[in-house]
Length: 170
Image 1: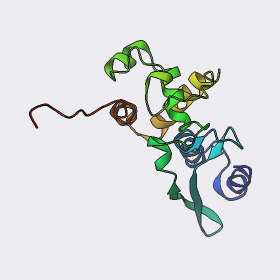
Image 2: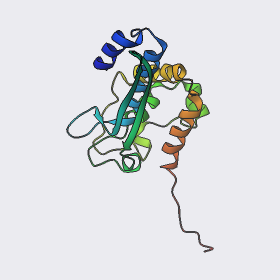
Image 3: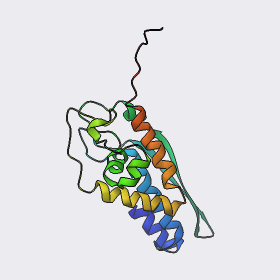
């Protein structure tokens, strides 16, 4: 981000431009969605991406973030002793009571959701709620409807608790 800030200083109008604010917001959103605690690193990026910066006539024309890898199996099967993606814990810590009810997460803690429960349970990080609120703000900056995204995230967590049983009628 330091290199991008410098590039924006030189050719893009500085970090106060809408373009830089959008890029910073996109990184914040991706960081929560693609980072997890592993055995080696509490903030390990599990997403691969690169930034394409297009310059014309000595000025920044466009920036794009290309994501090319996401450790998808972590969502349903985090490795033993590791946590799922940060966004799930941040969401549980940061949702208002009304939002939790609307998303059918009322009464659930991380330990009660199969995709988040772990025998090596760690206490929620104190900054989870603050990071979630920053993430929510960044979605707004990017024009991404907050409720659309958290509905999908909540559905993933709740689907993890669905259990199927053989019926007696076949």
